[in-house]
Image 1 (cartoon, helix red, strand yellow):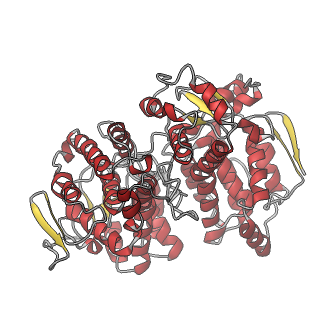
Image 2 (tube, one colour):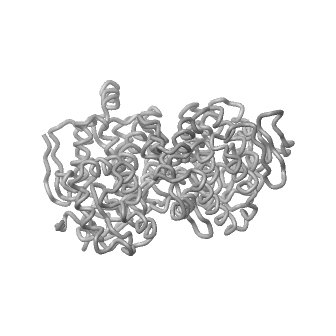
Image 3 (cartoon, rainbow, N blue to C red):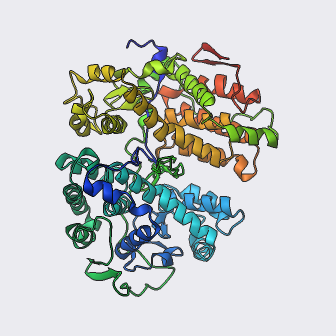
Length: 632
């Protein structure tokens, strides 16, 4: 497909997240006896989930009493500030802040809410500035509040548990496999960082050795391969060289054939013995102090904002389940990774964090000659007509997931990404635009170097085995994280264009777009009390900036806006908040030369806002990069 200069203005995608990309695309189990039988219930069963929590706690806290950890808080000297709660939320990585934000939404005026400015300020560092002993005391005290415990549970599920179960179900794994994924997310995060190996790399290495059940493989063989990859990853990190949580626990269950985590279960971690079922579960005395310190310092690579993952890298966007009961990280890549966030999030930021800058080259052609100017988020005065309460309720009730509104959203994004309202013509698009992420293709810019193209082709192949792209899956796994075309050229581009004529491939692109970008945006917009326009503003931001951990990602843009105005969900005015969000978005765009043309905000979204069109009702008239567009 030949691109005009305007069509070179699209950017590429991040996530995860949080929240996400690693989230399952389908809840359907495989047809194998192992996969189909064991994946049927899985960790979604409350009793199995509680077993998973006890198993993790045996390794993290040397006790099966995971519920005693809500009040735990301590600086364990790992460079991530305070570590606290049931999953080791950290002040330096962003998920502790996300927990407190959740708590503040549920219980405004709680004892921890006053520390939110300090938590935002110390994120990305090990500092205690503005926190200290008062914060630690408030955290421990808050643990007596059921709302705070629920906030911790929700963040754990959005950032770790939900993404693990979602991906495992997609791979056709039962309760044991879902737990194995979950424990890997908890320890390693979703993506690699300096000196660490993340879940995605482990999974890719395992898939290179054995097929997952959803691909027709044997569940035991695949899980053995995954645990081999996990052990190799653990041994690369000085703080994780003891592999007993795998070798004398998970591997034992696997060899015993307990793919459904059937009790009784007996295992050892760090030399301590534990048992669930068939007698009183073993328990170890709790350590003294504010809760129980982790058995060993968790290796959570410091991530910038959404940890999607898992610290929700998606996440930053809260986890939401679709109609197939599959977590889709609304929020990631956490992510947020999200991510949570999807999601979004959540150890290390998803390696697709910068993905929405993928098509940066296209925007750079438009931005050529423009001067890079950093504009404070508060530089623009918010104007517009405040909607009535009735208007807001109506907008949120309909929202961007209304089919007609969703199509408008697709056209609006396409006007900026491809200088055309015909977004459906982009299924065939594929090109290496020289941005270091390999091939960029399809309706939302899936990239061979960031993993979402791989996820897309895996989904397509799961639905349509033997398709024109299936033979390239090994190569896509190999080039993930690079700009290489090895194993793809010369036939991959032609195969992509051929596949684009298949309605099943078009649907797969739609579903991945929704899972990674659209659904997380709508979910977060709804949770913030926003109507159709606000949900679109979120979606367009995730499309361009991603939901990762850098200062210009969606999560950071939203944080900057929250520092200036409250969203409707917190009692704020919708127009005022959206003006603050768009101010923050413009600031973020101007930090990147490739995004410094802000017309997709200032002569499009801002116009709709100033016209009081919170519902994105046509007719709509706007300009992007000097071109005029009209709908309705």
